[in-house]
Image 1 (cartoon, rainbow, N blue to C red):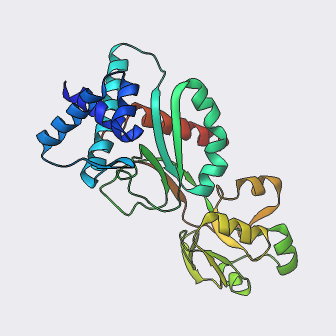
Image 2: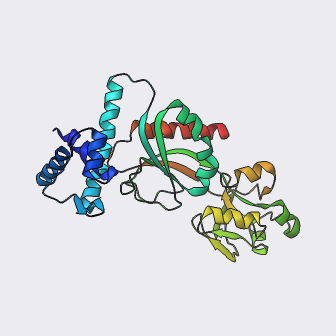
Image 3: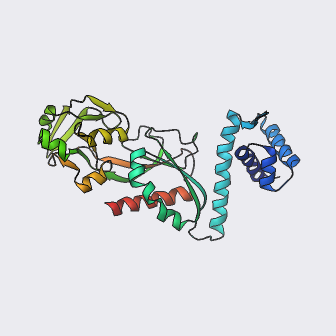
Length: 295
């Protein structure tokens, strides 16, 4: 059995949790599956699977081998499709990761047309505001915002969005609208700890001004920030992406429009040391064009 076939057998065992289930999926005998895994472990000189009465679970080495083997199989399949001129259709699984609110508002509702273009493709969406380890989680591409802290990442900037000071119209009717950074000291602000914290940096023409805002409510997730603002608890600094529906409806209003905040960049980040798959590249192109249309 060649190495690719061996990897396919191992991946199938891990996914099904047993030799017998893997044998049924592969349409071969169970002894052949057991022999293949035993030979693989002997060749690598490492235990890949732990056997127990509850089934099979991968060791740490087995899990690492599983992720890389699965990727190698997918890349080999993509190479076959490209060589055969299989058209634009993509197949298999695409695993993406994005911040919860951004994905909920701007990605998940628009997956349908992309899936319609690729009827043999499945998408796993992991929603997390943290920057998770792409290799450990088996992520094909992550959408990350802001400044990338790791210069070694394989990344491509695909869009940017204005940051603004905003609040509900009801809040401003009650407390008045700030017109300059110094006016913000008279207001309560909702502090987004992952989006710049309490130190807001403004520019106007050639001048710069920094202000430490008052914030009795601090949140580390965009969903919490949205709920606090929409409950009229204070104003905040956020990207237009975060409050796009409410800005469009007029429920939320942007103020201090003649002052500017640093824009927010959106990056497509790929696992380091690995060529981006055709599926990941196609998805990133789709998101880029989607955001251009949403403008």
